[in-house]
Length: 220
Image (cartoon, rainbow, N blue to C red; front, side, top):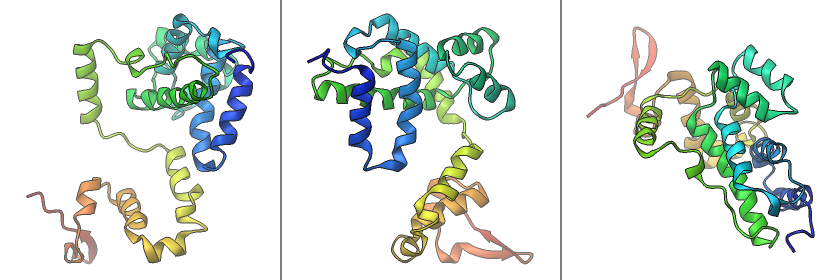
């Protein structure tokens, strides 16, 4: 059964299964597209350990879509992501964060797990161990990731507040039933407060300072 369907056909079946959750679809399409382009195998069963390493190298060295230079590079090398990753690595250009890279790896891993479930692949050889550095480096990298408060980029904010049904067609319903899920992101957007700080707010924590509405955050 491993060679009854091509990688592309298996992907089409996977998308049909995922079609019920359309808001999640775009999160799979980009990393899986990169994956299949980098490995360049007709059948998933033919993917080698070296192919996996090339894919992980590519993901780790993808530029973020946050500046003109990165967007121009992505557009220029969209037919050869591996070459794009080499250019980013060699020139020490900005890269996506480790957290983002791991999330993209996870999306591809879910696709490969599906292939295993439908018996189109013997096993999923993609693991986060492919992307994490050695133990001492890993600890330093993860500590650094935890210490840095990563800001949402414009694309992510647009997806949350302009494209999400929570703030459009279903806003009225959620304002009646789940107000916290509406107000917490908005307060975070406008104040810069941390999630745990927002979640512990009470009505009494809203007060005026020189005529300006403010939140009182209790750090104890």
